[in-house]
Length: 186
Length: 89
Image 1 (cartoon, each protein chain N blue to C red):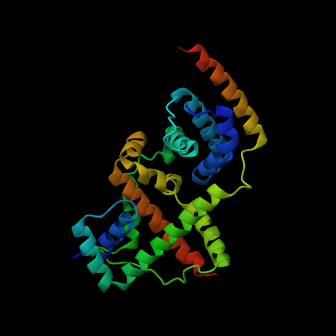
Image 2: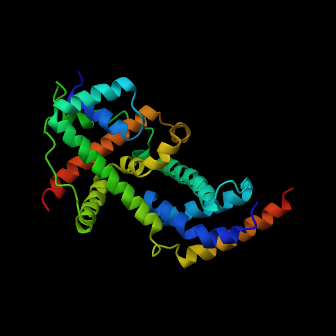
Image 3: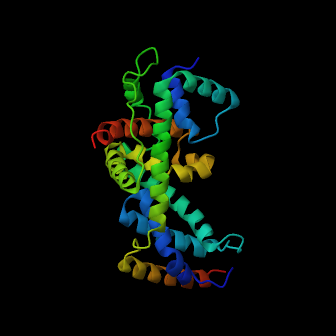
């Protein structure tokens, strides 16, 4: 154990952990819960051996706490349950015709170049994300956590990696279409 | 030969896992001959790039801090957890 106390963890890394959680959970209360649970788990685990920086170690715990919170939420709200995905199978098919060609070919966009355009693009992207089914936007936001260790995380969320790829695909199809409609207009 | 639907699925998955060699080759070939999928490929990449930048900007944004209330609550929770862990063998 380094000579840092749990209070140092809170003071030095609390804000960072909060931002990390807030970006992915998009809910201030849930993000606070995730940070608190992380610090408590860190005290209990006593596994910190100074091999990685405290922040890296704490972020590793936080990732699992974020997954935990999402799993709990999905239990409470079946519409957000990540493991229930079979029912809406037909959604993506509207983008393609029967022979597998694009029903509507993707329109050309100007990629957001300068800082101002990137900001505008981001605002539209966030709005588009809010229109996705919640479980899809959740998974899309957690994609980088998922990428780190997709076997373990799929197990925790009770989904198969294949299922997760299908959901990420649907999220991207929805986002891309939404951006096409709204980004092109600007 | 991939259909556009299959190609679009592989394009999305290529952002989440490494494609197999044969998937890579069939996708590469499809992208050479299909303007629509090549465009789709660039658009997904730019969505991902903007998302990644936003995540890392948010993580570095010093103005975004734990609310004071939450910090106080956590300090207390830590105190009691530390006391409890001292009592444990």
